[in-house]
Image 1 (tube, protein in one colour):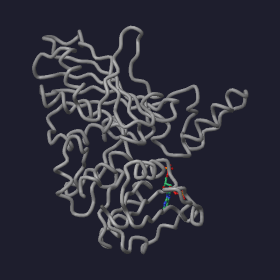
Image 2: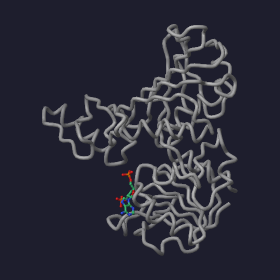
Image 3: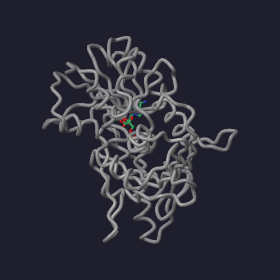
Image 4: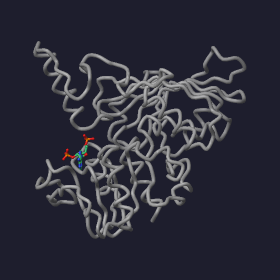
Length: 333
Ligand code: A2P
């Protein structure tokens, strides 16, 4: 195992999950370095039965560190991940800073674990919506090549961090109390509302989140011939993203074949009960490791039984972020 592990963003929503996963998985580590901004220096974080001091992230934070888990935003990763590597650490980076860098592997351990071993110091963790989608699509793609993916997301507040989760709770209270709901982190009211993902829109009309889902899928699958289109939407759910996924396969495929493949797929739990109706829900995906998959049905609009519709829910903070990063680190041991 690693001797010294640094968590960058230890006070954040993903940082909190890093700590709980490390505890649950029984990592044997000599020393943890818990890092955040100057605002949090002197605060403590509960880990492994102790209140541990949070330190301010500085250039010298990585002395003696052999693994650094980063989740403090792209700017921090760009500035400090190279410092961590120079100090001898392997970085698993949850931000988008290095994901499309050809020198940096982009890894989902259930899909392309071998890529992790080709790192030159930094391994990128994919976008949360991408991870949750590719977990069930990959085993299907292996059985019958997927030619096209049309995905619509229902993304929770957790994807924008701890303060965004607090904002959803505060706004919900404000609305119920008959007060104006003030947006602070998000550009619009999220409570009792939804809006298209607020990342910047490029000249093609896609926002950055949608572009990530497209390009990252290609990189993880090592195949940029798959047609992928996405519409990313933020919904008033606290944690766990959901996605409606429409697939076109090269060859005919039935819902029973899909159910059979997914029932054996790592990281997937099929929740597809018709009577009484019980399908994936964010409230049941939160806090667990598997991506829930259901509503498995033939897309009747596609000729030759080549289309399948799915509905999935996966914990954005766990498999969509911290769990995937922790699994990447475990590949290296
Ligand atoms: P802090 O709590 O001190 O602001 P989230 O995604 O939940 O918003 O969490 C972001 C994480 O990134 C937090 O741990 C936050 O620390 C950390 N962070 C934000 N800005 C910086 C910074 N300039 N230097 C180090 N850590 C930072």
